[in-house]
Length: 228
Image (cartoon, rainbow, N blue to C red; front, side):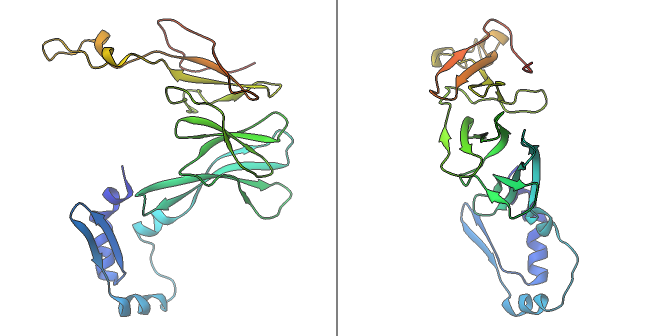
């Protein structure tokens, strides 16, 4: 659900009552509410009750991951993007010994960062593909160009996973099907064999070259995996 659909019925009346300026894009233009004098007065009153708008605007830290060397923690920092009408997360790093946090990604949205075994690189997910970024900061590079989105879910466990030597990454992705096989119906009735459902399997991608190799195959799916 988008931020606008969640908040508009609740927040818009509150904005009008509180005299706060707001602009909500819509199909027929924008809805604007403004009362500058009242908003200024509110700013000088000190503490006030927290609103639903304030709750959505609170930054959220998720998916904290300690580096193998124990020196840093990576995490997702999510903020409400009112222009994009959705929460947007980026990957950050915090030294355990203290100091300022470091933002490692700044794209449209990134998440699910995982440390390499030597703690020098992090993989992360963006747009259904795996990217790599140096742990000390720098330009990210896209590692996978898979035909279907790479799975990244902690439950069941389908997160992209580094090999112990850091030379490759295992991941799960759905198989592709020819467009001619998609959405085939018989008298407006879709049967199981004619749906868009495809099996999902384990793949392996080289960190150096980006070459992908399918590890499992068949008329069954990998729902979770763990490297030993």
